[in-house]
Length: 356
Image (cartoon, rainbow, N blue to C red):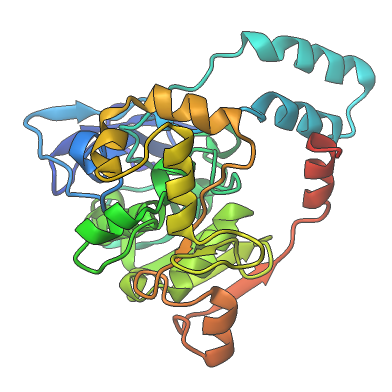
């Protein structure tokens, strides 16, 4: 970190000034919890992300924003399976598992559209490469502030690193005929994907202030994050927002549902949304108004109690015009360099979580 950078570095974004922290013995600046869109609450629930409001003065960017509200019902089993797979001796594994209940639980909220930036230099003239991370979690769980990603290691290689939150599961990929009817494009369901695109737009507008090069952005992600990379490569609205891509262990061509027709044994996305509304006791007209009037807690109590409920990116003919497999076969994907591969034994982890 350059000597002139203060212990509390301040950067000016298009929405206002933010104050970060130094870490790694002063070699890296970190800014956490930066809003890249307005809170998607109230009438903005199940709507495309809207611009974040500007603020006066200097906003502290010391803490992660809340994770997207999510199921997280399997987090304990996931962590236990992860610990079991580390090859540690039984005493160490037992100690870490015993400590798990005492670790702070990450905050969750519908107000979740925040991102985090790490940079080894803050001079716009440096134009460092930018790496934009999308977390996994089956499109149902996870956060850009997860402990797995909270490290300066990558940034210390002269890279600006961005991690993001996006709406997941019920809040991120819920489709319904009434939602489609209120959309100018006649579609619904890809709010989480639109959040990712909005975060990339924020990077284009602001990352130079953190020493990054908006013309050298690599998107990368793992598992559902890897699937998101394929979706962004397929999405016309994401064109020009990134320049390279790394998809780590995406499942086939990405999990997805068609908006209005069954696919791979799954109901059409709009039908699935109506089925969920019926589980909530809502039938007849004006279901959307009543769904928006319910609290997130009420919705997620129902969501968690039915394991068959899962909401995924939607092939809607617009935001996601085709599945990645089809788009790539036709040569319709973004024409950027791509690294794609697998993570060894990822499925073994989930076999341990879901033994049946």
